Length: 219
Image (tube, rainbow, N blue to C red; front, side, top):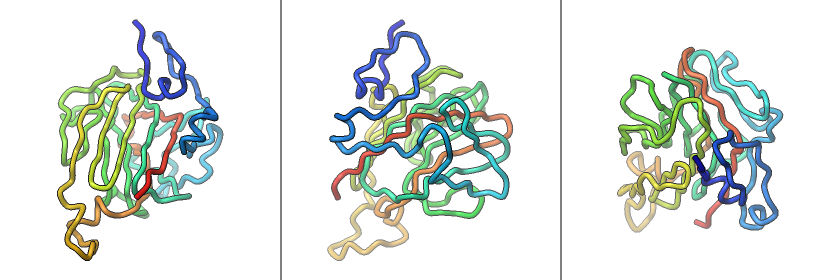
């Protein structure tokens, strides 16, 4: 069966029942503002937030494993942006992609947003869900199969796409708290800049990530 992922659409490559290859930014993508934040070889620019390693690079991919861990991209914080990443997850695995998070030395991120990665884990919140805000009850992909997550975050609007299909557009009502534009506790999550980070959830979860591309959008 033919399936064209959102990322491969951008690259102009047709995938026919095959795993997504490690992709390179095209000149057209570069001109459009896309940058790669994972070099496919090392974790340069990335930092784990626990006292043990929970991520490794093999075969051009970032592999999550072991106990709870979050891998932050520390070179830049993003506010308005698009993010595309290719992901696969094992049977009963759980993971997530966070954005607008502030750095934490340990535990689950308490700021920012999480887009869930979960095909068959017992947690009823499945892939594409915006944790705590929008619930997708059935995963839009299969276990151990690559899919492309595309997140568009512009001011107080967040759009999530899987393999080119828009799952939802979420409008956060807390983006503007008044004429002064003061960031308060209630508005901080959507208004702030923050880091992108990847989740290793538990010893039974083995998420894999590659082709991590970001494009900054104007404020």
